[in-house]
Amino acid sequence: MGTTSTHEHEIHDVVGIGFGPSNLSLAIALEEHRANVPDRPVKAAFFERQASFGWHRNMLLPSTTMQISFLKDLATFRNPVSRFSFVSYLHAAGRLVQFVNNQDFFPTRQEFHQYLEWAAAGLADRVSYGSEVTAIRPVGDAGTGSPDHLQLEVRGPGGDVRLVRARNVAISTGLVPRLPAGVTADERVWHSSQFLERFRGLDPNELKSVAVVGAGQSAAEITRFLYDMLPHARVSAVIPSYGYSVADDTPFANQVFDPAAVDEYYFGTDRAREAFWHYHRNTNYSVVDDEVIRDLHQRSYEEEVRGHKRLHFLNLTRVADVARVGNETRLTLTSLLDSEPQELDVDALVFATGYEGMDPAGLLGDFDRHFLRDETGRHRVERDYRLVAASGPSCGIYLQGGTEHTHGLSSSLLSNIAVRSGEIADSIVLRRAEQELAGVRAVEAAGAAVRA
Image 1 (cartoon, rainbow, N blue to C red):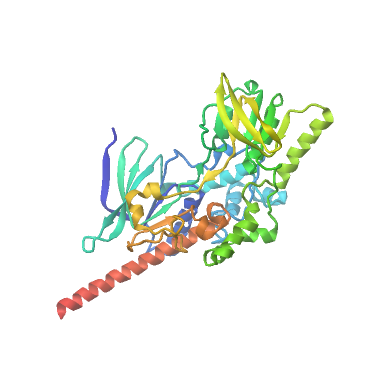
Image 2 (cartoon, one colour):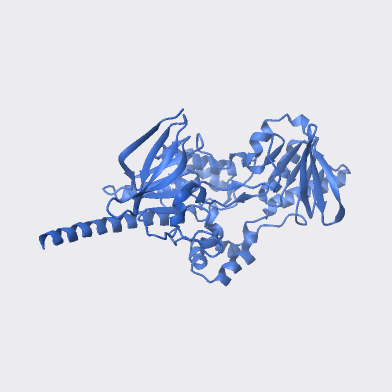
C-alpha cells in the first residue's frame, strides 16, 4: 500500500501534466527563459505516467514520414537559434550534411521520434516518469479564501502518493483512442495506437486474413504495412468513404496551421470559424498523403496484372458488429453499395478510427466548476490557452490540446507547438510578475493604513 508525502513549502510556478511533445516544448521554452533571465527562473516540474519518453511508438512504421516540415519542431518557430531544434539534433547526431543531401523537408517518423527523445533527455531533471497526476485541488488564500495555488496528487511508480503544489498547471495528457460504440479491444482487435506492440506479439504465419477500418493516414499506412509484411494474407481495407481522399498540403491551404491563423480563428466570427473547418478539414482529418495512396493503388494494380488478388478495398462500408467466433473475429459489414450485410472472418482487426480530444474535466474534478463554459458546454479558453475562471482564482489552468473550438485546427497538432508553448511560458512569466507587483502594492497599502 502506498504512502503519502508532501513538501509544504515547495510551490512550483508551473507543473506540467504529461510530457509528450507539447509539454516538452513548454519545458524548452522555460529552460530558455531561465538562460535569458537566470536571476528569475520559472520553477517548473513535469510528471509523465509512461515509464520513459514515447510518442506514438506503435505507429513508427518503416519508412513512414512526418506530415510537417522538420522546421516545425519543438522550438524553431519560436527561437530559430534554439539548441533544442531539429537542426541542432542532426548536428549532434552527425547527420546534418547527410540530411541536407536528402533534399527533403519531411524526416522519417522514426528519426523525428529520436529527435524528441534527444530533446527530452536534455531535460531529464525536469520530469518524473512513471508518475501520474490523479487529482487537482485548489488551495485558498488564508485571508481571502480565493484559490491562489493548487495541490496535485501524484502517484509514483511504487504507488506512493506525493502532494505537489503549483501556481499554474499545464495539462497535456494527449488524445484518447476512439473505438466504435460496442467494440472492445482484445488480443485480436486493436486500436491503431496499439498496433506495432500487438502485431509483434503474434506469429505472422497465423495471420491469414486481416482487416483495417478507417479512411485516414493511419489506416492507409497500416494497410500498406500489413500487405507488405504478410505476403500470404488477405488484407481488407474497410473504408467509410469511396476510397481514400488526398490530404491538401499545398502552400495556401497549409496557412491554416500558421501562428497568425490562431488569432484569426480565435478573434474571428462564428461564420469565419465555421469556414475554417468547412474548407480546410481536408488538410488533416480523414485524409491520406498522396504518396501512400499511390503506393496502395500500385499494389492493387499489380495484383490485377498478376491475376492474384489479396488486397481488397471495401468502399462505402461500415462495421455493424464485431464478435469472436472460435479463434477468429467476425465482422458484420454494411455497404451503401449492397443492401445485404456481409460477414468477414479475420485473424486480426485494426480500428484506425481516430481519437477523442483532451478533456480536463475528469482531472480537475470538483475544481472544474470554477471555470466557464460556452453555450455548447465546452470550456471557454483565453487566448493564452488558459481556462476562463468564473471566480477569478489567481492560479491558472493551461491546456495543451482540447482547444480546437477556440484556437483552430492546429490545437492538437505539432505545427504550432513551438509558438504555443512560448505563449504559455510568456503568460506564466507575465502573470507571476503582475501577482508579485500586486502583492507589493498590498503590503505598501497596509503599511500606509497602519501609519495613518
